[in-house]
Image (cartoon, rainbow, N blue to C red; front, side, top):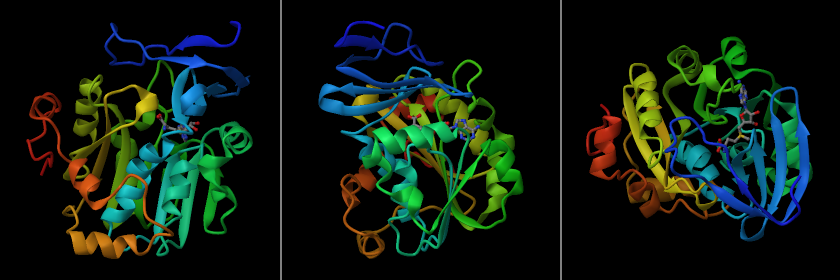
Length: 298
Ligand code: SAM
């Protein structure tokens, strides 16, 4: 291990521009282990605070995880008229679970995580991400492969949050980024159910986003791309695909205000304006991923 502090360079994820690398300056390695599924590390990174890495890729950093988790988890909950049951696949750091549990309408949040060591390590080193969510009486944590669990769970859910690691060579999440898994998720969702999928970098992996749209669109004909800048990912516009079998309009201001009143407090990132702004995609990228300029595929 290099002497601390040191510059750490992320391995290149698939579909990434090979001329660009993500670098962070690591003050201290707080944790480093190989679980049965992946390499788990926690770094102390100056202004970003503590950061979780899986197989060398940054998953969440204390300074800006709220942006990512509000986008992947809170946004679909706020787009649904009245979410009662939420399903989270992946999300071992607990941030998506925390955001879903903020809704007073929620009666149950089921989280399926492959690797219980991610949950344990994050509770120990990054407790501010889950903020006690794993102990919430409405939370049900299932350990195992999401692919298997979605075949066994009982419908119906209102929101399904797919918060998986990026695909890597032989990565455990790879098989889930495909239509058979999305079909199983669709079976679990009610008529107005909403799926939200972390979809990589729109700026640097548009071909990946395009591929995901192709997998999702036949199953969720109402599909919209939202983006946000998550500084610690150094990924330009980060993509979140949101889909449904029913129309998925952006809420009006009064509707949004009403839905916000079901939260334990105001979001830090998702104001009414940001929800609408996050659905605006620059035409040159909309063209690459094959979406109409209004970003709605149907
Ligand atoms: N924010 C993230 C990112 O940027 O990619 C995702 C974070 S979350 C930590 C990803 C989780 O997905 C990990 O805890 C990993 O163990 C889990 N995971 C990977 N493959 C899985 C599978 N097949 N079933 C369930 N969970 C899986």
